[in-house]
Structure formats: structure tokens, C-alpha cells
Length: 156
Image 1 (cartoon, one colour):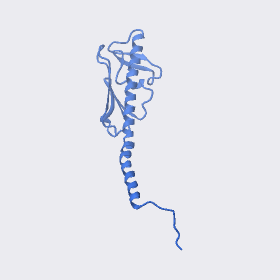
Image 2 (cartoon, one colour):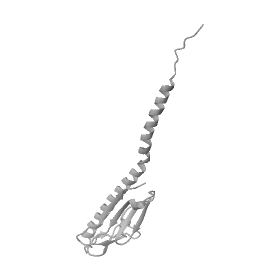
Image 3 (tube, one colour):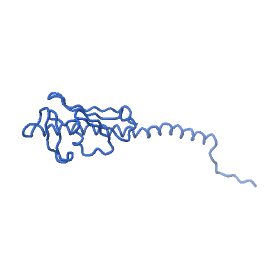
Image 4 (cartoon, one colour):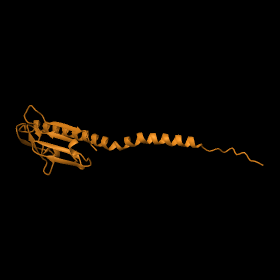
């Protein structure tokens, strides 16, 4: 007596085709997941850039309404929570490079290099800070406001 089994398995060809398809999908998916860190760092740089522009505009507004008006070559304004004593140094009504970081609430996980003329911010997790940074350059005259330049060519 011979029993006929209705159970059938996959053929070797079907198994190989499935493995090849999974390999192709993995080849495309893995680089997309790896690149998420670079995209996240670029997004954070854009956020820092926007924060620097907003902080600069806020300081300039406060300098315009202060008595006396603080839009000369140097001056100071008082901003609660900014820096150790709440004083922000100004050049032409805008924060200097050395004082702009005090206007930001949190620079954790960022490296900061500041001089009176400019401040550079970069994520400490980026291996190439020269190609993944935001540079704030202080105002150089009453008609030239500060500039904020973002470089995010290599944020690995």
C-alpha cells in the first residue's frame, strides 16, 4: 500500500529566488538606513541656523527699543537667561560672534568656537566638522547685518 501525501514543500529554485529577492531588497534598504544619521545631522544644522537667525533678530529688536539705542559699533543688552549674567555684547545692534552662543538655550552635543567676529557650531558626533557646520559672522557695519552660513556637504 502506498499513501499519497498532499503535503508539498518548496522547490530549490523557489527558495533560491526568494533569497535573491531578499538580498536585492537588503542591498537597497541598508544604505538608506545608514544615511539617516547624515540626514539627521543636516536637519540639526538647519535648526541651529534658524535659531541663530532668530536670536540675532531678537537681539537687534531689543537693541532698537533700549534706551539709549544700542546700534553703534559696540553696546550691550540684558537678556534674561543669556550667559552667566544675562548680558549680550553687541556690534551694530547684533550679537557679536563671542556672545551669540549665549542667546541659544542649549548647545549640548555641539562644539562651539567663537571670536568677537564669528562663531562656528558643529555637531560633536560628526567626524568631519569642517564640512558639517554653521558659521555666524557678526555684523561689520550698520548696513551689513550678520550672516549665517550652513555647510553640510559631509556630515558623516
